Length: 103
Image (tube, rainbow, N blue to C red; front, side, top):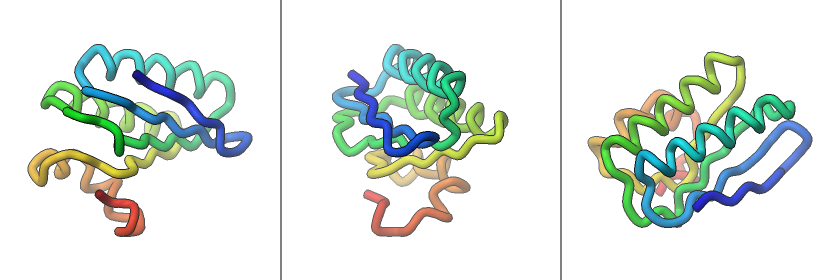
């Protein structure tokens, strides 16, 4: 399940709850696309309540983030529950986040 929270006129946070599979990634991608078309430019993904993320889900999340960047937006993963190996997918984007936001 995905919940959204508008933080400012151009910033939105997506709270992902439960397992993060390909179907969740598809729902998240559509929500990001709609939000971008509504004028949002900064996208935060709170994964603190994700119980499981499979390899396909983590790849899809990386693709969503890359799509945001390709359109000139900014994306951040907060409270990343992924294993060390999977974190490498997000390395470039997590490096400039304050370490206290990492999980």
